[in-house]
Length: 319
Ligand SMILES: Nc1ncnc2c1ncn2[C@@H]1O[C@H](COP(=O)(O)OP(=O)(O)O)[C@@H](O)[C@H]1O
Ligand SMILES: N[C@@H](CCOP(=O)(O)O)C(=O)O
Image (tube, rainbow, N blue to C red):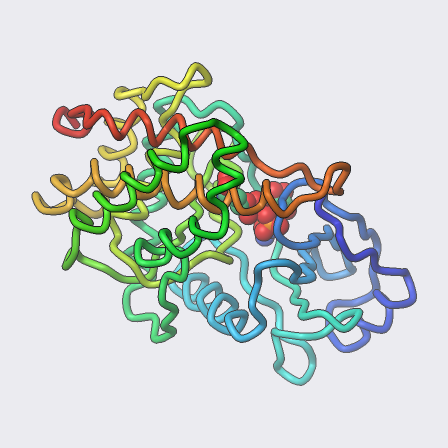
């Protein structure tokens, strides 16, 4: 349940009075999500999402995210447009926390993506990379490769507690990645969290929209592809689905062909992407008290993905 901040009817009324959205007709908390509090808001003028920013969102980053959403929407990309209040402001304050209203995007996410969904998602990702070109906002990837070793140093014991011997394995991985991390690949604005819960489909299975840009940053486009391969192309039994991966890459290349250097880099990028999500899940696991409102995601799921990539399988050689 991701409603950390409950909003009273009175607070909502006062907040909405600053917008020209008409009177509220319905307002309810959204269970999905882990980072922020999200509410579905229906007013006389339409449906919206009200987000109260919590946890990891740094207030100084919020204009970057909201302006990016506006930039993408202006270029016809199906992402939620931020709604300005009567004074032209999109970033507001509610219950003393940063908050914003964005448009509601129709569509449904899928829990078990098929190769056809992967193809569509791949195309949606390439479209996003192209639509983001020219966006002037800059945000370094604060969860990129140089940040992994310092982050892990704070959570070595949690890794050992999960699986004895794991800390030394991760140390070796981190050292290898520091030496072999691909550099100088084509880069720009990436989503960085393009997971199945953040991508919507139409009822005919076609790509509909992307949400949740709150990890967006500047990094290699192929790294975003690697994050996506990890999130979409592993089976529940931990095996990598090469057919799904090929479909995802083929969908991506409908709009943006990968260069030979980007293809060559994908195995290491996917290994690093698995490390990134293992580490943040480990940190959350460590920091979440028993009985907390939101159940932390399983770090071992990403440790298993990391192990698959560690084997150096030529998964992408056949893509
Ligand atoms: N613009 C939007 N249009 C429609 N639904 C949305 C939109 N933004 C968020 N949601 C809904 O809210 C849920 C949580 O949003 P998300 O941004 O993923 O939260 P968090 O950042 O807290 O993980 C999504 O799974 C989706 O159901
Ligand atoms: N995708 C991340 C967690 C971030 O959650 P989201 O609901 O904001 O997408 C993970 O799986 O670790």
